[in-house]
Length: 492
Ligand SMILES: NC(=O)C1=CN([C@@H]2O[C@H](COP(=O)(O)OP(=O)(O)OC[C@H]3O[C@@H](n4cnc5c(N)ncnc54)[C@H](OP(=O)(O)O)[C@@H]3O)[C@@H](O)[C@H]2O)C=CC1
Ligand SMILES: O=C(O)[C@H](O)CS(=O)(=O)O
Image (cartoon, rainbow, N blue to C red):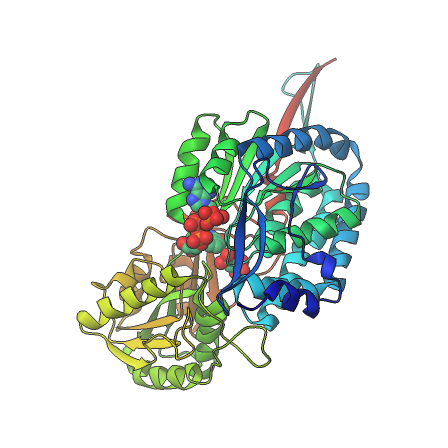
């Protein structure tokens, strides 16, 4: 077995960024019971390192420290908090290469994508640090001559955060950015597959001057226990979650006992629609970006590709040609565009969707099998003649499978695109302005990409409707989820 801790540390300019202890109340700790769990490299299948396997007691200490530290942190001016967050942003960008290497090692995405995620993740720290200075209230004309009405906004308090493995840096900063900017205390529990990126964030947050307790990282395989501590501990005022709709439901049920405020960024089932008046080359480029980014492991990946009959064959041929240029391999190797899937369960889900489709009449255009590299590597795949009866129509594949559906009319495809419990991202390519207007208004999604396959940015409100979530992350709207509004009625 490769000693990939040494390998990985040898890659880093600053090996101290590869932390292997949990970060609680400003201290680097082991689990109370001394237990640990392995962090593996999905490209190599070997163990990078072990980290502590914390439980509810350690989580409760992190929450108590956050509650204590939050009061002084909130009493600082927005500018003072902004200055610390700016240092955190600057340190993330100065260490982008190392943070990218750590992210690729634990999650698998190619290094270029990992470095891109670091810049994307850092942008939330930068953006919300700036917004810290703009937490405005309002005055309202009194309803009686002797009444003066003001509205102020105050930090909600202690925030519990649970995030997935597919964006192990940016999904945390998209939450801790606004929370810490407004003056909250933040306890992060990253996915067990990818704790190292979160720990590296803590190393840099400590260097930037975040007060002890404001940002803690709970490394643990006991995800259910940590979630229950967040939901049952009366000091926690807010739960923010990114992950599957299935787990989101569990957490919402648990949070209901305290009527806890929740932000939920859940599953997707994105339609990607190509009309016959589309720029086909642009549509292929957009489909490649939307479908194969992070090897299809994002909640906003195109999950169903609808192509109007008149351009179906041409689009399918062009897409297959582009897919065949993808370079599958270890993300730490130069030139690799497509890494491994996160685990064997992900491989089996892609295989299930492909075999189900083929069994119901679909055809392979390219790919369709596990990659010769073995492990969790999979051939980027295009399948044609996909119909509504197939699993991929209603389930998120979360892998490198591009299923092509044929449609005839605008009304038909909008109805099909909306026929799902999900409503996160959607995309379409067209050039007629009347069609663009009708379709962008007709799609029941929180996000619509028009003639683009990439919609992710810190300046826009990211989030879903229906069972894709509650609330928005990013943009000035992202602050509201971490603020409480207070109405003050003064009688003079
Ligand atoms: N809307 C969005 O922005 C995003 C949505 N997703 C969705 O998430 C799914 C893929 O990510 P995946 O990680 O598999 O999703 P999961 O929902 O399985 O896991 C997400 C996080 O929740 C934790 N978790 C799992 N069960 C519980 C529980 N009972 N209580 C508390 N925490 C729990 C996991 O921990 P552990 O795994 O360590 O047990 C992980 O940290 C897809 O459906 C995808 O669409 C993913 C990313 C972004
Ligand atoms: O986890 C995800 O899939 C992200 O939310 C997608 S994005 O914000 O990076 O586009």
